[in-house]
Length: 359
Image (cartoon, rainbow, N blue to C red; front, side, top):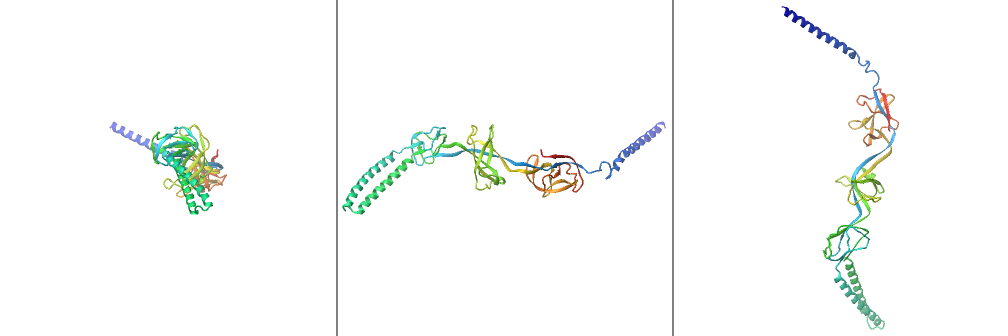
């Protein structure tokens, strides 16, 4: 009986403790429950950070791959077939325009030339004699004209042979640097054989392509900066021409520029990184990226006007890592909200805590 009484007393004590705990918890929640729309924590407009819109310069920085090219590059080939009897190609050396690079065998052509020249001399002496006979009517005008035509025909044949001899001489078309030769003395050449490659390296060209949306920003005279792989400094090039249309497969526009100054690290054929400053605006209205509120079809910004949040539709432009260009919807001096965007509702009163300006 004593144990039963002790169990009953412990049960009553436990029940009393549970009721006491519930009572204490309800007392703690009572102040919060009473704090409704007129409670202490909900009183006053919400505090947000703001940013003052001001004009600043901005440009869209684009990096595209490019290649350095010689200003001119020509594969040297023979016009006619023949055996090489003279080879003046020193690999890797500079040559002048008109220098003889390769001479083909032409003894047979020169023999024909000599034969025609002798025939021409005979024909000219015949014409001199017939001219005197014509004066005394010792020969008809027709015979004299036929002799003159024969001499003219010989002159034409001589000119054709001289042109054929000239084709056996392969000369440099311009000042440049000779590459590696592919033939040796005594080789038999055909017009399809590549003898060597001549490159004009006194100037270099830079070739690259830009996306089609920037095609209207690139034109003759535009200056670009570039750097080659493992290069130590930036270089400049001036656009000389662009392709007449955008490539439909890559949606890019091919551009060629002339390198303004030579440098030892600029070698034809190397890869280059071209940096373009496109769409530059010196008086662009910039806002922080986080203040843009994307909607279904528009973009909005909360503008602080007369202590009230005004949701304004804007049109954006160039974007960088921290700021966005505003094309329409804002004006210089507007104050926009940059924090607490999810908590602010249209046309509600707000309070500014921190105001920043463009640094």
